[in-house]
Image 1 (spheres, rainbow, N blue to C red):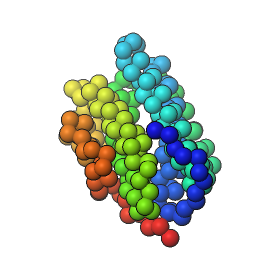
Image 2 (spheres, rainbow, N blue to C red):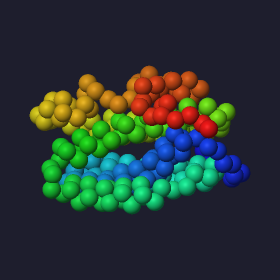
Image 3 (cartoon, one colour):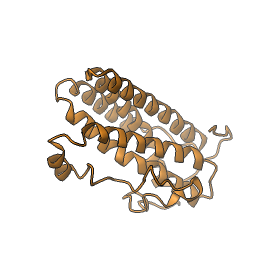
Image 4 (cartoon, rainbow, N blue to C red):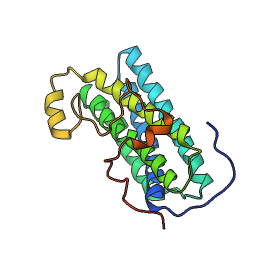
Amino acid sequence: MSIKAKFMKFTHPALVRLLQKAYSGEKAAAFAYIGHARSLKDPAAKAAVRQIEEDEWKHRENVRALMDRYGVPVSRWLEVKLHIIGRIISASCHVIGRFMPFFFAGKLESGNVCEYFVMMRHFHSLGIREHDALLYEMGMKEKEHEVYFLGQIRKDRLMPLFERLFAWGPGKTANDVDLHDKQPVEESARYCKGYESVDAAKPE
């Protein structure tokens, strides 16, 4: 979905922060998946993680287009911080075994799902609905990523322990999206009502 080039600036602290976080976070995730893919031996898994990396770069591009459209500046602090974190995670994938990269990638993607549906709700509060299809597509793609990563380790012996420690796994997720029972785009703003940043700030 294309984003119109017309420039418009708004003041909505929660939405600004969420766009900045998503933009820099997508880079960190992409960097992490570069190392993750390289650490894998199975060709199918390697290809799948590389595709997820490409998805994250595309999401970053889409978020940047939204930021430029509405005059939202890039957070240099987040860019540096998450760049370093992404690189560290990328390198660590070669030494922490197979389970943990898949587990923490799945937990990360689980939270990322809600970022895009919460963005949609924030845009709605400003009377803006033209980005619904784009945000819906990105949110659903993140859910697909979560489901993939979980599927790779669901039966691992470490899963019960890590699920208890980190509140993510077969029985716990950070979102309420079900790929087998998707809400249509028009109804999807109801997703993630409990997400912590939904009412973090109101438009000024």
